[in-house]
Length: 624
Image (cartoon, rainbow, N blue to C red; front, top):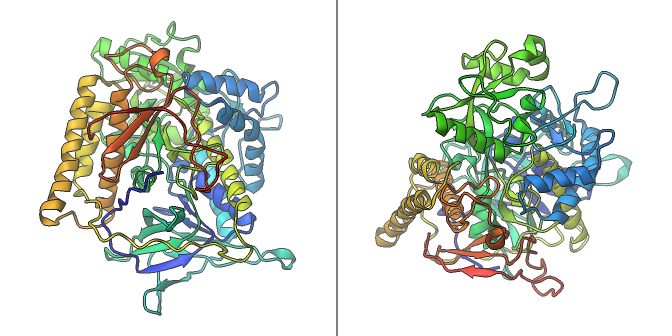
């Protein structure tokens, strides 16, 4: 691990609270980690950017994949996942997912999640792209994420008290959080024993990781929004931090991700000295409701489950163009379907294709896909009577902060799970409905590791002392309007279709934004005013630079990385991972692994010798 010394330009924390663990994010991964940590007796704080139920999880329509059906096995699930991952999955990580997954889903049901049941009893399972069996459990027809979020939020709220806590401020008197501030206190459970409750800090943007003198995690700084001021910055001091911040879809103009998905966790990890891997593999969901060529922001998703139930992809003439391209036709893995749609669009000069499910009839649409039906009708399209216009849009980051099988990153005490992490499960392309399962399984593994490695017995037994901030200038901030510029650069240069030329243009324009901000700070000490919009834009630029650097380096087409100038998969040269970190001078350090095996992370104890840094080839690059 290299200490970068880089931090966002922000006011010094004006308040702080101690904890055993702080979880950043409130999707399936974050809330599962928090519940398991609390159950192990750890004083747990959840920090979330919006409300507890406003993360990406609630937008998940299709379902959660696990070998729960008759005749299905974890081995079959493993095979489908490896095929979808196009040669870059870490088999050990996938095996953990598929073997621990069924019981993790059962524990989710025990927590209160209610999945749709078949008429004869038991879970009603469906198919999605890349799956050879019906193994997708769903809820509310097409509202699985909303149901999982509801159950987990209820469990988290039950694990704490719904009251405001005082935050310790500088100079004695306590300072209370404003709207969406600290919630909860220690809660007492039955039997006379005492369990640490879960405190939640809502409407709070995490800023940077705190570390102690030995480079171990010491907590996070964060900004609580809604106080009507720019300096609502505080800190949670804890020896363990779990990043579960979700994705970075807002780096593109059109995405299925909510507005809060600005890559904050990946950017924080890079500034802290952590490594990220496989960031070039951004999955573009093939069937997103087409709202026009200039549509920007979050776009409505048309779940893969619609195709799983028999919908057909057709062009304007009604031709099923996916037939003959793959044995599963419309149910091929997402990267193959997205490429099939893009090829047909280019052949015909069309802006979109169509998803035809008129044969479902009104009753099936209303029962099985009520959310999608309502979204389509809200935009003037009735899928009961007409085909739905669809086109690919940014959906899911298969790469992220590099972790091992326990969710540990290359920074001691910093963990990551869910979309922000790169566990090795997804490889070059995520299998449909594996994301919710990965969040569940790896969140549980993280909580077990934190509990097993806790030092001492009392509350906050080892809350480390953070190192004081260096005296030099912090990382310059971009003006909020740069967000739109970054999104358009990325969409044009690093979207579904990429080439050496398009990526070089994107890199040059991103580098100019980066250089201009650095120059302004160096020459006259000026930077954008600290605030949520500026911090988000700065985070987006950070992850965009890394994504483009990795995409330029990978000179092949594999999974959801499609290079027009390198249309073939090259296992000899590129069946390996690209790993990126941030140097103290803010340049990117890029290297490749020697093999497709997912490399280990650094030892969590800097003096330990049982784990070592992965070998690999360092790739000389100019600042990108």
